[in-house]
Length: 114
Length: 115
Image 1: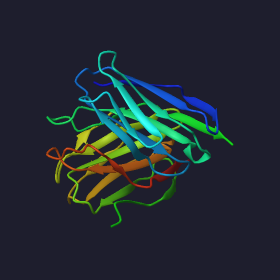
Image 2: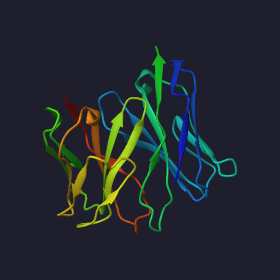
Image 3: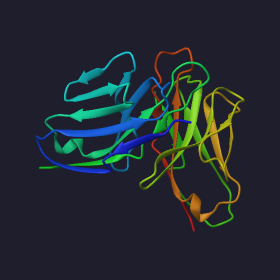
Image 4: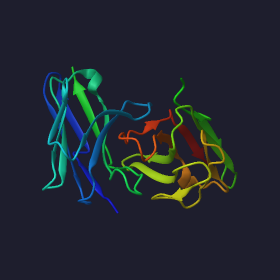
């Protein structure tokens, strides 16, 4: 089955700095890669996703890059703000066929210091 | 539009007791999932369902049972609770295979403590 490794497990940055979280996956057939943000005591919520037919996707201050050859993808947050403090999870799955499951990384606790 | 609703929000059980967690979604989603979240372990899939009347095992199914008698509801049962089942449980749902979106929508979670 799929295995997703996520690094770092914790990340502390100063407000205004950039933050980068990296994930690797094992299943070369995976083609959908979402990122979820979970604030303390809240539910995970999708913040951005990317499919394997594109290499980069951007939404305001967040962007995701994908390297299919190396089987890794990254989340980039620019101009970080205190409200970006949360746990971020990457995930991977195949779309279509009989695979319906997301495999999640173990999460990165991001702390943005004012 | 409530989305995904989980009940109860909190529960304390004694070892050996049983309970059922309810997940209800009003988005007409085909697929539903139960995860558990433990510190440092991320989200681990317990069981999932790809449609009414179907269930399948996930990554950590032991000690849990599920039922999907109605499309909108997915129940997670603990027959004989153990302290190792102390966790936060999340339900999620998504559109079916024909949808271009794989987005899973999560409930607010159930915090369960087994003493």
